[in-house]
Structure formats: structure tokens, C-alpha cells
Image (cartoon, rainbow, N blue to C red; front, side):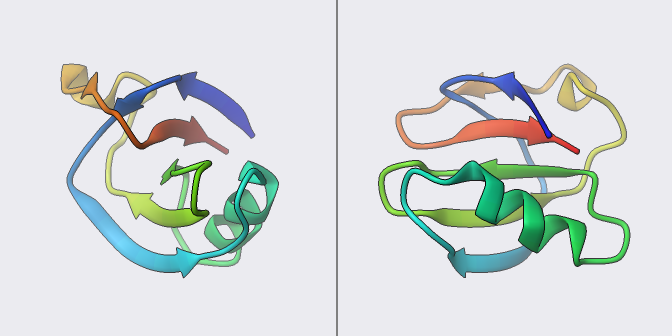
Length: 75
């Protein structure tokens, strides 16, 4: 797992994994890793919200944008 965007989000969103664990991006990485084809995810460290991101590269095809909630990760 690698942090690609601190305070950055990306879309479109894929599977929503719910709130896995606050302050634990590793829990979100595990949820993403268990989902076939999940290579990227967004995670909210405040409440543990975790979701797959449907993109094919580390820059989100140039579509990364500021976020007050999410961080963008790759596996």
C-alpha cells in the first residue's frame, strides 16, 4: 500500500467497503485487496470510510482533486 494523495480524492468510485476502522488505512487496503481488480482506494481516516477507485494509474488520469475527507492510495 502506498499513499498517493494526502488530502486528495479521485473518481469514479467503485465498490464501497463501508467504515472499516478509523485511523487504519491498512484495514481499507485489506478490504480493497480482497476485491477482485481493486488496485486503488480512497480512505477517510476520521471515520474509516473506505471505497474502491476505478482508475488505471497513480495520478487518477490527472483527475486528483483536493478533499477535506479522503486520502488516495494504491496497492
